[in-house]
Every structure is written in C-alpha cells, then in structure tokens.
Length: 84
Image 1: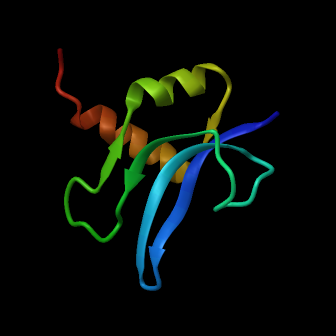
Image 2: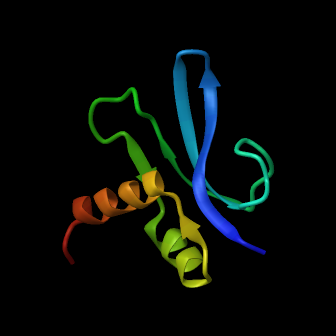
C-alpha cells in the first residue's frame, strides 16, 4: 500500500482550510484517511500551520511520501522549532 502525507480540503467556498492527513495514495483527496497529524490555514497571516513532527517523522520512517506542500510545511515547522 502506497501511503502519502497530504492536504485534505475542508471549509466553505472561498474559505479553504486544510487538514494534514496520512492516507492511502489511491484514495480521493477528501476521502478516507489513516491519521490526521496537523492543520494548515492559508488565509492566516502568520503561524498558519500546526503539525505533530513526531507523528510525521514516524510515518516518513515507515515509507510515507509527503506531498510538496506538506514537505514545505514540515521544513518550516522544523525551522520554527526551538533548539533544545
């Protein structure tokens, strides 16, 4: 089974809101998913995404492929993460 980390569109017309989900790549964009790992709101000016990096890394370690947009969101979240 090919697993993808991608965006699932929610919200109303002209007010998009996305959930970052792990889904079988053969399922439709807004169809059934395995797990929700974050959100993305493109209409918010700053800090417009929330993602659980531990879950994302776990799924990527199992072979899930993030879409280009989700990969960009993950990169930005890692840069914003405080250095420990």
